[in-house]
Length: 159
Image (tube, rainbow, N blue to C red):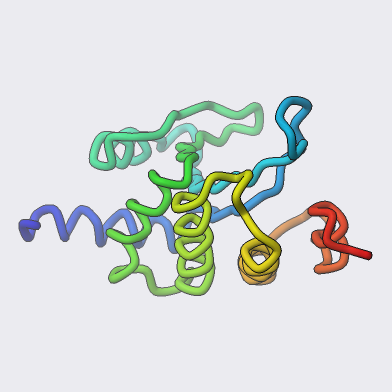
């Protein structure tokens, strides 16, 4: 990797440290056997008047989609286990403030990428719950956070 690429990754990591969210969520689904799925997301935010850096990041990473929200903000959203895993692997050496969330999301994306959702065992699900809790406890969030008990119930791991 050339020095220019490293500079770009360092800039993106700095942007991630300041104006982004790292998320690991459990989403309900109507189809499929399990009726739930895990979702890994990196989301960069910027005031819509200054959204150019988001297009630059999208171009450098060659992934994601940009949308304008109703509140005057623009976001670049990147979803997917493989994509999140690869991006975090490249950004991790440069991340300073969100390193705990980044490590947890990276580890979760590795588990989810290496196994099909249907093949996740109880040990995997418990580990994923731990990663969700690490991420949400280090994120600013306005909604009520889910407890470990809530997450165990969602995944059917309570007696």
